[in-house]
Structure formats: structure tokens, C-alpha cells
Image 1 (tube, rainbow, N blue to C red):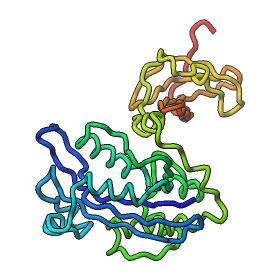
Image 2: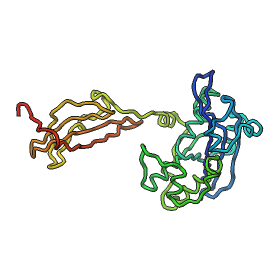
Image 3: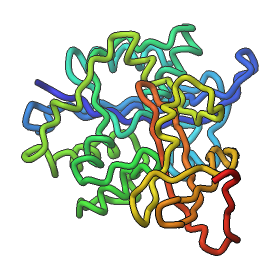
Length: 290
């Protein structure tokens, strides 16, 4: 099995025809490896801007790419993707996080009105692989490539970072820290199907209606953090900052507390976050009819 690690650079451009911003890709950079992750080929291509006229100051500062370079040495997006597709062949495509895949989808939608990436058949998210291998995976607090490299003791030049081919090579160095001990096969997924795009493009959201059928209402019960018995809810649920809260009283030991819970809908499940807040400073809760 061979692998291709891709990195993209893009510029936020506003399209007057589409009436929206597009992450317009300006550079492809990739390294191809054998099954032992030794580099056997490289790919680098600048892409001429068609949507935006000039690079933003931030992009120029980070990438050191100039408008003149793109105009003189770049090719159009569809030509670049055709060349890259030939370079990739049937190999596994890998990127650091999914933002590059989102950018490709965004550009294909703009140019062809179709967000499916024709050369993508198998895919691996290197960021997820490395974070889980380090036992640092946190969906809400992802680790950037440079930070990960520093954590792993990988040497790299900050001046070379944010150029596509250099970042692809840096991603490879991070992978090689784990491949001898953590199998990467479990992180490779089939990508030439609707489910891949449905999962990738699904936007997680917080459920804010307790009547939503996705909510497991048994999770609304709270056990006393003092004695472990199921406590009684004594107030109505209130929604604040996407969290439901209510006051509870344990009739076994008299402990009173506030229970907080949130329900985050993901593609194939609901993530539940429960927390007990100490309520000892509040005045005693009385239960009517007890």
C-alpha cells in the first residue's frame, strides 16, 4: 500500500457570481510514500486565482506566496486537480485534519457544481490518528500540526511552515513517530461513497428541546454525589448556554445540588455531558408533598 500526504494553501475570496466566500486553493503540495512511509515522489503546483484578484495580507505573510508568483507560475484549478489525481493514482490520500478536504469540496462546488472529489477513494485523517496515538484526542480542542510536531520533538523550520509541500513532509514526520506501534489501517476509510461526504459535511449541533426524540430521557436522572442514590428533581429544567440545568435534592442524605446536562448531536450518535454543581450555598430546598 502506498500513501499520498496532501497539504493545501488557500485564500478567502468573495465570489460575486456565487454570492459567497470561497476558500480558493492557491497551492497543492504532496509527498508520496511506500508502505513503510519512505518518500518515493513529491508534488508541488501553484494555482492561479480566478475568484479573487489579490491574496490577503495574512496569506502572503504566512505562505510568502506573492500575487506575481501565482500569475506567472500557476495553473488553473481543474488542471491542477487533474495532475494531482494522476499523481495520487489508487493510493490512500492523507491530510492533517479535514479542512483541506473541505476546501477541495468548496472549490469543486464552485467550478463544477459538484462537491464530490473524483480522485478520492480512500482517506485518512492524520490529525485524528496522531492525537489518538498520543491519547490527546479532543474533538473540541484539536492540535495543530506545528504544535503536534513540537510535542513529538520533531525538528522543523517555522520559516518553511505554511508552504504546502513542507507541511506535507512535516505531517509525514509526525506519522512516523507512531507507525511502528499504532496501526494506521484502522484510520483509513472508504471515501468514494455518499456516507463519507454525509459524515464529513454533517454539522454537529446542540439539542435544545427536551422533547427531541434523539434525547435519551433516562440520562436526565442524576445520582447524588454523596451517597449514590437517585436524587429528586425539584425545579423545572432551564436552558442556558445550550445546557439544561435544574436543582436536585437527595432524600436519602439531604444533599442538594444543581445538575447540568447537554446533548450534542453528532452524525451517528449524541454526545452527553453531565455535571453536578455544588449547591450548598443556596437556601434549603423544600419538597412539596414529601
